[in-house]
Image (cartoon, rainbow, N blue to C red; front, top):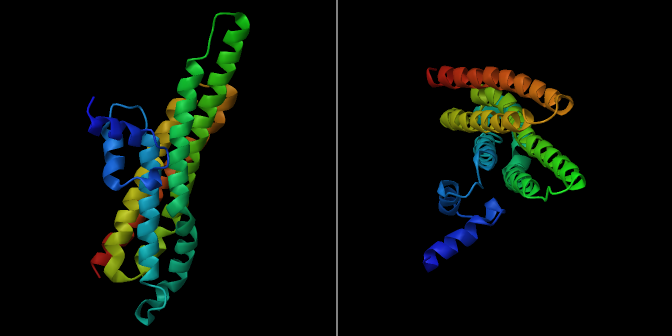
Length: 223
């Protein structure tokens, strides 16, 4: 193994993705390591969606020409600002949760007591690995919910930025829901059913809101 390879492996083991460069994160995703994976990528996408949203808000608020968009911008900024860093935290938590699942499968299973303890650990870790992306999806949906009005009334010169932010938020939401689903279906019904119900509800809402934002962006472009 070369020194470069050793250095790359060291970077991949870091779970503070906000400290990575974009190139390092992309290389980590491309590696044959199981982490970071889609859940962490969804978190990073949400952070970028939030950052773009804040940018549009900031070039709308205080500019008389776009006064009708000040209120929508202020609301959107309140939602988006905490997500710039918060979504990175979720990306980190997603990787940590997946590592916990893998570790639980490595527990000893020679005795009945060990088998029971291992089974309980797997269940607990898998449930947590469902809750983290569920929060990512919920946060992404909240961002989507404020982007339609921002597209309609915010600074028209940045309406396509709202569109890109919406696409990123939608991808983050739907991608996170994939992770909730795949973890939830391995859990007992009493744990999986509430999770899957939320998956279906958020998926439907995010689909409708994503379409609404895209319609608003396209309508604004045609004005």
